[in-house]
Amino acid sequence: MPTAIPLEFIQPGVSGFVPITIGAITKKWCVYAHWYGDPPIVRWLGVCPLHQYVLAPDASENSEWRRLMTNGANLYAQLIAILETRNDAINHRFRMLKVIQPHCNTAGHEINRFSKVYCFENKETYQSAAHAARTLNIAPSALSNHLSGRVGYKTVGGYTFKKVQ
Image (cartoon, rainbow, N blue to C red; front, side, top):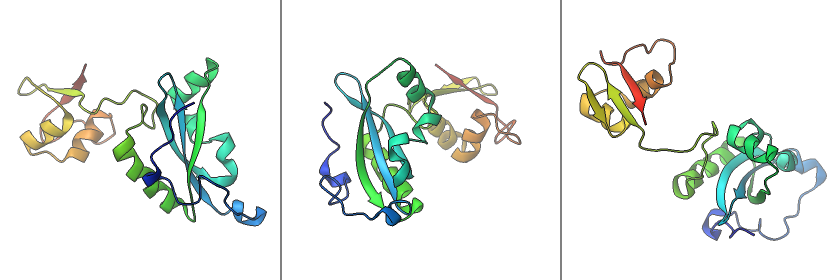
């Protein structure tokens, strides 16, 4: 059984019984975590309407989560917060992502915060996209869009990059 997420992240009252009427449950949002492994680690931090918590609709879009489920993995679920609006839930999840750093990001791929990038024009390899953006005075969002292959970002600041392993 995994160790629960530290209490400073959990909304007061959620770890015990929370009084909710059937009509109100369809109007509330929740933040939840899925744990997996030995030792258990957070694989997924999700946000969904409270009445869909058991179905984990946003987790099912995650490729790593789907892979674990098709392999018969035992995932542990933890309800972390019940909130009034979707924005409140997303903001709560965002604050948790910074500290907990779950094993998978929303695309399902392993998180590698410091993927190196190679610049074809100056033939330099940078430790991260952020480092390349700072060094070459490029907007980090534009570099991210370029590396993701988004339309309109064939080059960025006159440079062309690729991710390297």
